[in-house]
Length: 120
Image 1 (spheres, one colour):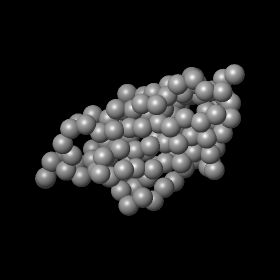
Image 2 (image 1 turned 30 degrees about the vertical axis):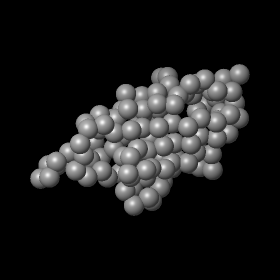
Image 3 (image 1 turned 90 degrees about the horizontal axis):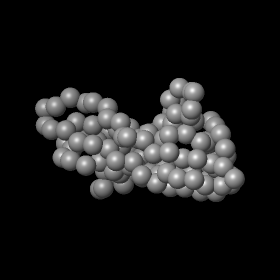
Image 4 (image 1 turned 60 degrees about the vertical axis):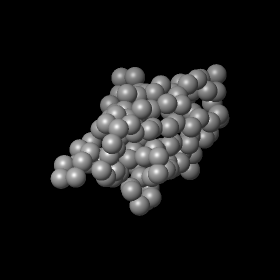
């Protein structure tokens, strides 16, 4: 099972981007999914999470600007980013907790990261 993130790119301040993260492979159960980011010289930080039931949580720095959602039928999580600021520039990573097969254990997977650059 792998996570494949996409949707990053260069955008001007105030612009929008939508990130997607799809799972590939057979999954028995998919739990919490989320987005994290790591800016140059900084530690990875939580951006937003969403439970299998749709309950969301987000960092204070992105509240009101970023929206996390998921499509359980497609095992995909999205991050809609609006009103982007230069300080949002980072590599964005998706993450998911899942069980691959019946009787298996929960484990966390990470996507490969997608670069978001906010600059004029």
